[in-house]
Image (cartoon, rainbow, N blue to C red; front, side, top):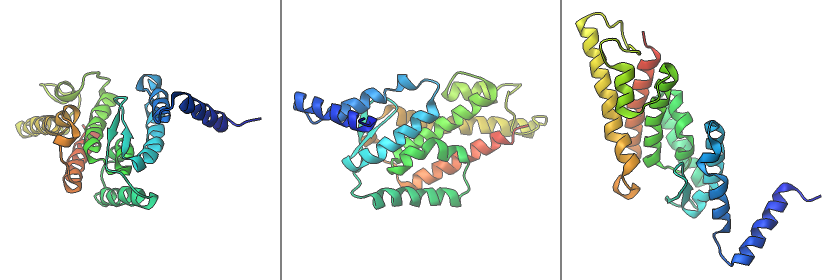
Length: 219
């Protein structure tokens, strides 16, 4: 009996020979990883996406959550791909950053994709807040609903004295600034227009980690 992977391999080869095109496998990946197929299975989806993108990185491609292929810097060997990931991850671990950041950015860090690692880092903050409060909005609106106002759902301190209330308001502005400065540009600007170095990415992760830890230590 032919195994599943052999049947799939033969089917792809047959289709490629019929179409006389080289993009059969890419078309198959596009259909198999269509985001709508993985609603409520986000973690599983990211695990699959990471495995596929490690291979695609050798061809200078990455399949992302928007359901499209994007061009990235091509890796030439497995050692290079692993060393990229391990170098940045080691730096992140040395800074003792919040574990949510690594969980959300895992796939992007494998291929040194700082551009989208920034976006995922900000997403981790939003998802963390949603999980605590049960809110559904996003970005600055979510920050205002969860941390703002005269009776915040999430309080980073006792919120009794004017000093504590001032700190809370400052924290709200910090979190909203993080979304406005990093998430919005990376979500809407083409990658070529957003150059982000490893050093800048590490600074961003440190700031995002601070926001997450203050939320974890909420009162």
